[in-house]
Length: 73
Image (cartoon, rainbow, N blue to C red):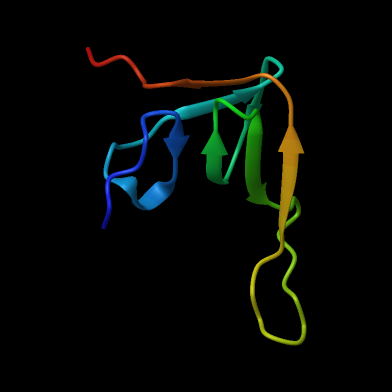
């Protein structure tokens, strides 16, 4: 997989678990984050499946995005 810029975050990028916050609210089940553009794609809550192809539906949120790594103890 091609290495992505440091402001792009996705589950398969190999950088581990992170917390995603949009305008101060924690976002669960994020599948794509662009910190520079203020974009978060996440699975719609409650989980919803598209009938025609069986894919989980995502929604795009916009705002001030912060990504934090959990502290190791």
